[in-house]
Length: 137
Image (cartoon, rainbow, N blue to C red; front, top):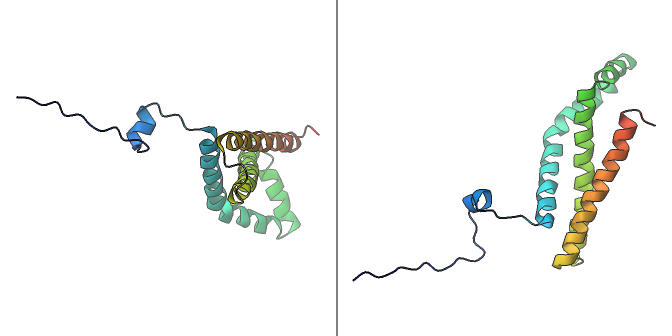
């Protein structure tokens, strides 16, 4: 006599393999939340380097000129732009999280709209700063 063993479905339990290979699609609000954490880690990790460069640029006029020449390269400007995006995204998502802590926008529709708003505002502000950084105006 063989018996068929049936597994109970597990709702709400997800493993790493499910996320990577199972086709699980992260909602936009979750994606913004993960980007908020990544941008915070990026800013925290690069903070000593940024403070060192700030200290060196404020030491004398010669060191400022060296720093100015260093930051005139395209690659360095792109790194600066990535840091600017990290700051702006982290700031906008932080405001979103503060409103959510006050119990505003917790339903699914409002969370999606605020996530879209965070992405649009942070990218738009980053583009404006990119235009200034690359000398358009």
